[in-house]
Length: 291
Length: 347
Image (tube, rainbow over the protein chains, first blue to last red):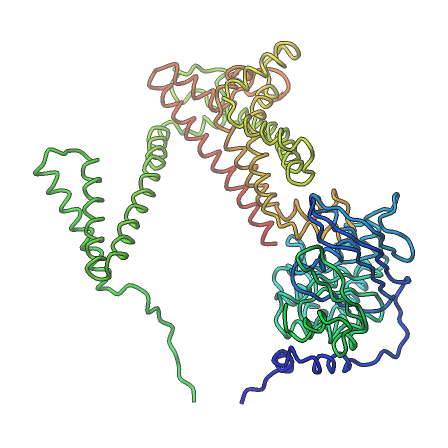
């Protein structure tokens, strides 16, 4: 007889608010104090535009150091745009504009005179699609951030190993660090991208739907990685998978756009969002009545 | 319980299918002979045309009878496609065959060791050679490469990475430049550089003229390659704390390496056989010229042109031999570049 894997069982019971709350509560409690550097990230009154199109209105959110925050909401509500304003990747899109402040350790990352490349070293990012650099080997990919930002480290091999271990990929690739990044499976490539982001030791890690292109097994593997990493850094993850939000996050913020700019409807502890949301729209979304 | 399975290809043609296809061809050939025999249409062209028409009708009718109208259309279009590819190959094959047939008698060992400084084009073939033309062409191509590839690739990077305010006008200019007649490039260098400044023929002048033709080719081909590099990679690079320049140099250009090499090959192909600008600015000497910056320099196209003009059987053979050597040289350059790019990709 074929056994249903754990992950599929959970998928089949999606849209049950009580089960999501159970999932959210089933996470092991945090007993150790956080090792995260810095004092976290704070977004104040963030607006974003593409041309004249107002896509994000007045988002204020605090991300405590060492916490995992999930951003959920239907497609097109501005979640990805929001996290891209946090590490100043938003400005790469032609016609983009923004308003508001993003405070990293109390300093506005948009202040004049700030070195934007330094900001991106402190606020790392993992993208939706795995994107290892095709011209580099696995090892070179992990260390590429150091070369790009021209950072010197004493022991490259040690850093390489520790990044791959933390990203949960070391055992699978330790014998073929010289192979091409493209030779890995999709899930392994995404963990390689996480290892690459870790190599420059960011304080905050932004993840833009990191598991949307992956199978359930790889997804669970990456979720474990996120829980482990949250001991040492602040993580903000955009996800369409509410199971995932319930499994990995400490806090959850619900975004929604009713045709106009995306707004943040509610933010609370993840267990509260999934068990007793304050807003009717949040409840409708997390119980699967729309979206 | 295990069953052993032997690999098979159920979709492959059976011998009966093959015999049938072969009989169609035989029948079409027979029909074309018969048709040419009884009607007024004569000549090779008539055979070929009637053969294809007969074959197309045969396979279409067979397709219609066995599988209906869509299959008939499919068979008919397949025949047209085959006809198209053969029509493309005929001139190429014909050119290669003609050059080899006419050039082979002129391929003597001495043409690779001697130049024409002590010989006239009308001399017997054992006297003189085209060493000066080979070295001249290589010098011209090498200098043009050194000038054009960096400028062409930097232009493409400006258009795709910097996307500055002048991208539109520059893209337009590059496209317009790729249509410039080659003689204009030669005249431009002649009047803008050679007469007022150097006042002397040289390989450098020839390379400058060739660069005017090569830069747009390299720039356009490179731009197309760079546009194919996904934006994900650029974003990943900047998100890791790289400046735009370091992201381009470390990630975008290496990812596009083989394509950029292809762009370079296209550039070489554009200029290697170019004659008109060299007539004006290279001087076309008959002696090996080791100094690329001064003095007239020969080149294979120039040598071919000059030998054809002499008009005797010996000089015509020389010209054909020069053509053959030029084609082989270009083939070697292409193969070398291909091999180089293939090895770097599979590292």
